[in-house]
Image 1: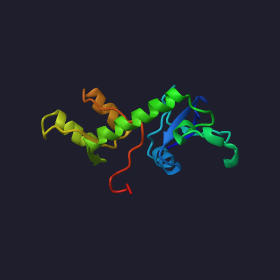
Image 2: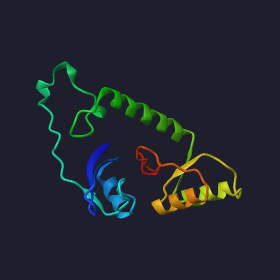
Image 3: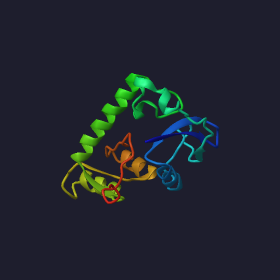
Image 4: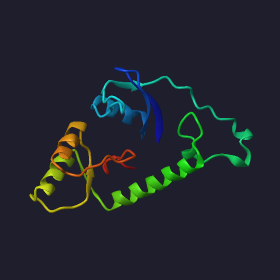
Length: 155
């Protein structure tokens, strides 16, 4: 996981975004999946960040932190790091009991909702517009807290 400081270019709102890689950020930005949580603008870019430069390996001693505890330029409180670990564990378990449908997520969710196909637990990709349409139709959907890689792309 990588955390980027992001900035809404329309109103200069700053916020964090979590991504599987720098390429995931670019892909989501190009597909219009990033929006400002304060104003909803889709004009979002990486903000300038101070690099998180750790001490030399020979200066860390016995108290080196686990990688999840240093995901931003400030140390994460232990409680938050544990919460993130638990959330990742819950998501992984939910995905094991779910079927990847990729880009057909909105179509499949809609077909199940209207009784056109058998109901099952699925996960995949949808645009913000598709997710809003599903919500407006009363179809329960939710974004996953951590990025998901297509089974075809997983190593």
